[in-house]
Image (cartoon, rainbow, N blue to C red; front, side, top):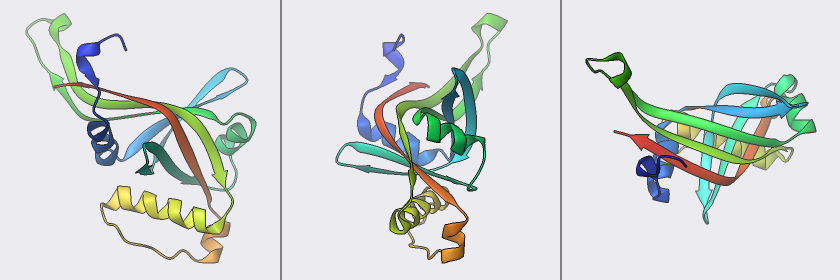
Length: 157
């Protein structure tokens, strides 16, 4: 990281940002061509392993890319605010952000899909409730998990 003075080193602080944000941008690559898509997410951080969960329809470009190349990155940001100044070049922006790299896996097991969907609901609603999902819903949704290999945080107050 170039700006070490803005790096977030404490893991709990990085997890707090992940918890606070609601949308991430997933970066994928197909034939050396980037593809970025915004997604709602849920997450789990256990034994120093960060896992994100996403869902979508059972077909589409995202699934096609993941099946051929499951390497991915994600970016989230929050607490953004314009910092005004007298001169144009002195304007800036306050922010908190996380960037991570890892691999995305399509979940096939029904219990894993339910767990992932519940983690998404938890992050989006702030409520730790276990939801039941009818078999028809589970059949018509694809749930992914991204096992994060590395993540960094950065902020400017």
